[in-house]
Length: 401
Image (cartoon, rainbow, N blue to C red; front, side, top):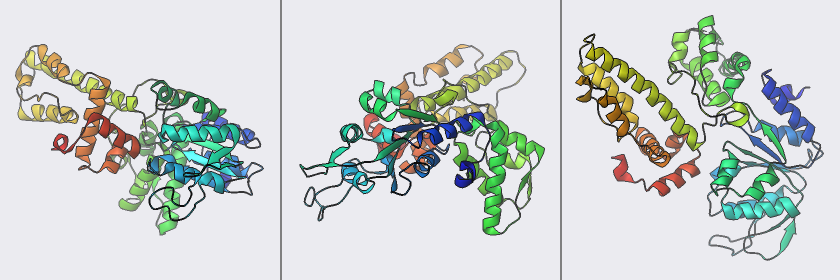
């Protein structure tokens, strides 16, 4: 059985084939591996592949989501603790590195580790030694470490959020998992697989895509990658009575389908990291650029007498700029034919990275009614990163009112 069949991996794109090839080649070694790629691309399959094809395959494989463990307890979770080490430590407990001795440990969202924990992890990688919380005894472990992140670690190193020595220790062998928009040839096959799976699970006829629908899903940029594609396939299968799906039906399930793919800096392997803060800002700026171009066109037509200002124009423009609470409303300015109107709108929008990121976070919190988990999903960042940014920017209830 091939590795694709064994792990349910679908696709023939060159970038994915290369990633699988590297995983299989490095599996027989004990080298640390760093898997990079956007959220939702399927990074979690690669440590499983590496472990299953390694000499450690008969020992434990433990996956740890570093972003889901509170900062105050993560050292205890990873390295264990002694009885009485802290309030509530009524017994001694082994950590994941002790439990996985002889096997493989997968550290997902490794960029979310606190700096103090990064020091402990570096020691394990360098010497195989660790100390339980509340103990002075040095213990040994023989663990193969595979880490994954959707954050550009080099930028995290530059900003002081991630240790440079740990980055190079983890990045002994890099594996880049491509975003879905760089696997266009795989999108249709993946959609059919997800639609077929849910049809079999719930004993319903499988949906099929007509040519227009297939074109629609292949042209969409899929910011949520394979996870989003699976979600859309399941939604359409469960909700639509019609089993032959058209582009119009697909459009109802794809947010902002009318927009072009976002043009930004190259990310992992030429892709884009929607989990990175900079990407959020670029997305906002890209949308604003398009919207301001439309506003300029409307101002020109107004000045030429081709159209008359009306309520729908101003309301629509206000909705466009609703993402940024500090933006000027358009009701009054749209009737003025002077070009200074557009300049004034741009002048009233935040200019610095931190200002724009703060406003994006406030907007997401408002849209999610203050639910931070949902806001983090809207912003394509982890909850821990969102919590840190809320504290850093001093965002409180009055900002959400």
